[in-house]
Length: 475
Image (cartoon, rainbow, N blue to C red; front, side, top):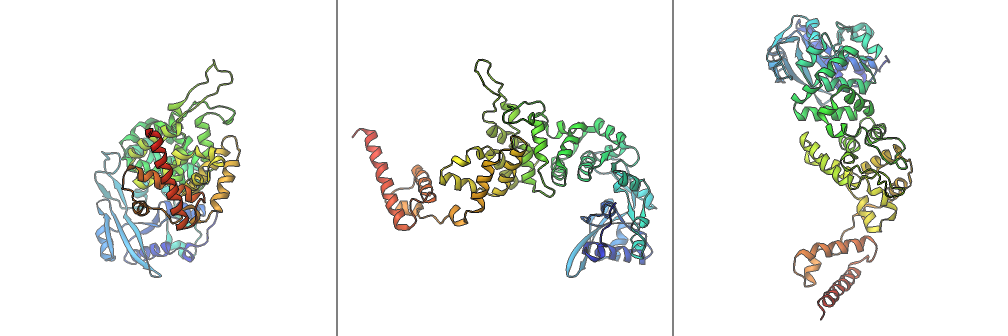
C-alpha cells in the first residue's frame, strides 16, 4: 500500500469530517472514520468522501449539530452540514448498529444500535470496506496503518488484493442483493480477486439480482464500466452468472462469429471485451454504454456465408439499426434519462458511418462532425478499430477534419430559412423541409457565401423544380 499526502493539507472534506469527529469525541462519544475512505487512504488514493461512525444516537448527533438533516434517521444516519473555507460540505454520520431481518433484499426492516464499533463492522459488506480509522490517533502523529481499527481482516485482504464478504457470504448477499454487483465493481476497480467462497455465493445468488430496482442496477453497472478495468468487470459479471440476468442481450454476444478478414480477434464477445480495454477511468456513462452496446445488434442479424456464393462471408446486415432497437429496450428497462439515451443510441446508430467518412460529400461530412459530443463517436471508433483490423485511416481523416473545422463552418448562420421561402411566394408545406435541407447542404458545400448569392441559388433551385414538375406532367 502506498502513502498519500496527509488529506488535512489538501481535502476540505477530510477537515469537515474531522471537525465532526472532534466535536463528538469532546462530548464523550466514540467516533471514527468508516468504510471506503479508510480503504482508499490505505491504498494511497484520494477518497470520494469521508463517512463517520459513532456511538452517538441520531437525536444526539442532531442536538450537537443543529445544521443537520435526518436523511436516514430510521437507519441511524444523519447528514451534518459544515463550512470549510466558505465551502458547504456534508458529512454522513451513522450510529453504530446491527441490522434486523432483511425482507426485500435491500434494507433491514429495523435496526438496533450497537454498543461497539466491532458490532457495527460485522454487518458491513466486504472486509476491505469494514476498516475504521481512529482519526484522533492519526492526527496525534501515529502512522495511518497504526491508526486503523481492523475487526475483520480487512488490511490483510487489502494487502493481498482480495474482495471477501464479512462473515457468511450468503447472508451478506441475502441482506442486500446489490452487493452482488458491488463485489464485481470493487474487484474490477481495484484489480482484486474475489475470494472463492464469496464468489461461489455470488454464483448461487446471481438470479436474485433481479429483485433489485432497475435504477440501482443501472447505477452499479455504470460504475463498473467507468471506475477502471471495465473489461475485467464484464468478465466477472459473466463468470458470476450475473450478466445473463442484468444484460442478457450482451451475454448473447458469446460465440457469435465474425468475418476474420475484418475481425481477426474473434467473436463479438471477444471484440467487445477488447474494446472495453480502451475505456479510460472516469469516462462518461454515455461513452461507456455506447462502447458496450455498439454491436448489440449483431447476434440478431448474424448471417452465415452462403456456400453457393464463392468467397461469401459472414454478414450482419442492418446490425446498427437493430442495435439501436435493442439498446433502446435495455436503456428503457434500466430507466436511463432521455438525454443519456439519446447520446448512447446515437453512438450505436452511427458507429458504422466511419466506413464511409472519406467518401462523404462536404455537407454530409459536416453534418456528421457536428453531431453532439462527436468526441465520443471518435473515441468509440478508435476503440472499435483497435480491437479489430487496426486500420486507422477513417479515424485519422475524421479526427483531422473535426479538430480543424471552425464552428461557423459546421454550423453556419443559415442564409435561407422559412422566412425566405415565404418571401419567395411559397406556402408552408411538406416541401419546405426538403428545400431547406437542400439549401443548407448547398451552403455547407460552399455554393453560396452571401445573402445575395443565396437568393440567386434559391431562384434557380425553384425554377428547376418547377421545370421538372412541368416535364413530369407532360405539358
